[in-house]
Length: 445
Ligand code: GTR
Image (cartoon, rainbow, N blue to C red; front, side, top):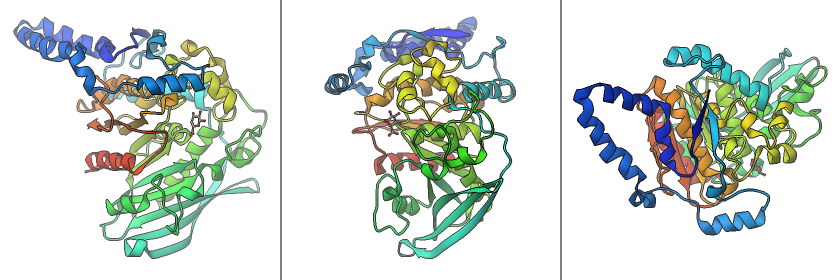
């Protein structure tokens, strides 16, 4: 069930079961032996040799030292990462090996989704509610005629109480409809998402996205659930939670992800939007949320986790930068109560974040990090993506990222998986969005 891996450099990827199986297969066929020798000579050996190191990202020693100094309770040294064993993504709880896309979809995916609901993000309550949509403002001549602006109220009602999610949507005018769209789960406040466009921010570069022919939309996570610990009294919890809170009841991240799905419900009613091509995007806590939204709601065809870090793409077992214990103490409202069992006890988790990423397959997944954001463990995010590939490849062999982490500012993607690490601090910038759109161009063609 668990596979031992080495952590320090990327060479361990060759320990992946899928590679071993492939190599065994090649060796069985004698006529293919020269191919095997070729792979060893030109594939494994150069990858293991130092000449490649210049082409792969490594944390800057200065930033490692600085981060370590400012947060001395956390590990920033790669050589101090203890070895760990990741749960095998392709072996079911009962020990069955998954070898086909069908088996993944029917057997392993639902099992992993349940494990994340039970132990990490929590479960959405079954409480009945109604939702309605109202376009409260429309400007067909927004952005000097380049786009149509729609401001939509999504009203959720249950037993006399209600809550409104405010969706802002720009649709490009000079493009054939319906168009693909990006939906940002905004965790930074309205200063980044001004519908009047008097204030502009790279965090939500609406003009640039419109210029590329995509619609761009946003809602604020705090509309769904304010980002503070109040024992789950306010926001959607106040509306839908009933009875005594269970250890697997949803936290705020799951609530925000649920909010993204309500925006998707709206897109399904808007003829301008191609609801088969909607990307959910989030930064940091919003990035963790986007990954979970994509796992829970398979209508999102592209999932983008920007600097999602611990509780997002970063492998928990590496305990590099932010840890499960710190997430639980600093943000007790983000995850379900069961997640607290894993504070300082990551090896006991029945999942790790490569499994969260795999829940996106066979849809498209993009992960990105920033070089100075060691708190969010860029290498741990990459390793999660790499270790999710066997699932993507059950559907499409082309889904691939290289063995070694790409160097700074060099985007890599193939098939339905992509990655980059940007130079600089924790943020989401136009440079990142350009990479998302390049990937989307390729996926949505
Ligand atoms: C930090 C938190 C991270 C990340 C970040 C953010 O304080 O430790 O997990 O979510 O906030 O959302 O900007």
